Image (cartoon, one colour):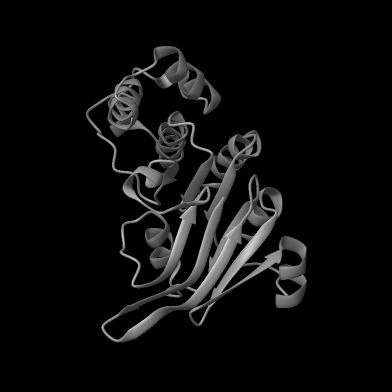
Length: 220
């Protein structure tokens, strides 16, 4: 589903990604792990086409990365820019129209219900908690119904109950290929099949338990 071959990205003569290759197979859930500043955002932005590829090749669903192919990926950034004066439902409508050209009311109800926001759909989101905002962002991301989903720190700054709610929703997803940037070992253990470990510009992919054993981790 995602193939990255010999990707190199550098800025101001500093190499951030050094001849990186990574394959994420269909229906895998892969955690992207690395220290702060290791290049995780650069890698994600390269996948999304937000950064031009300086050297190497990226293919999505066996097709070279183009603007059209980029639309096959649903992306939830760490900070989703929503409209605070609109209600949860109105935000869903706006982004649904932006992504697909129309707002399917049944689909909106299904997603808001799945993220447990249907009862709060008519409230302005400036009154939502951070967990509620993140669940709304996830619902908006899932509206597109893409086979590939990229999530950048989806539980960052959320309390334990809010984190569990997000993880429960993600665990219910079927037939999705997911790349998840995370610092939480328990989160990775619950959700992921593999880890892509980014260190000193290189990426190595492991099964989750093998990565934990090799790194002698009690937490990330």
